[in-house]
Length: 278
Image (cartoon, rainbow, N blue to C red; front, side, top):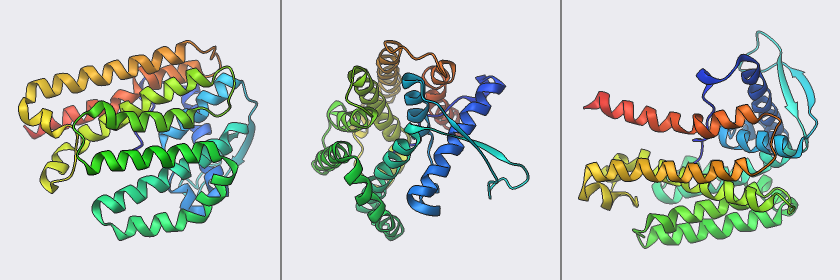
């Protein structure tokens, strides 16, 4: 379900790209501390965005680490680590655990079940550190599962559960910025759910899986495409409004690149792929 909040590297200045990569590497290093090599396998762009957002909002100081990466062994890499890195890595593991379990329940994949079991101890340890966030994720994942089981046709309801879940995760601290962070996570979560459903539509049609967009697509393909584009645009617009209300100066250009451009790269890729297929 996650992995849609990308940066648009084509429109990113060279220095900002280095900065973004350093946070990405820092998150990877922290995931290794949290869960070993299996933790590093969970690295995703969504939590990199959250890490950079929290760093910019709270103006956190970075520890700069140089290291050799097994994937890119020819030269030393740079990783930025700060107080939000551990939080982003922890939330990455929590979300990945539930995503794997959800995939197992949907498709019966024993590989996904095995991967989830391997994360279980790490997940339980994180739940002690962040009971509010983990409890929220469990609650909304349960409600989402129940809605999907009854084949809920109101996409606002099912997408809302992902929104509520991500809203809780974006609230790192309960302070003056928590409401704006929650709002930002809420709309981004709904955006992610809808885009995921949009990407999976044809596969779900073939397999007979639940997808809240199926009814709309069957009724009118033209209206379906218009609905998806306009809804995604509205959701990301509200997300951006929440961001602009906060006094984020550090890394603001990177964050705006993601919010106004990067989040659309997957959608544009899917559109191009469909045109080539036709």
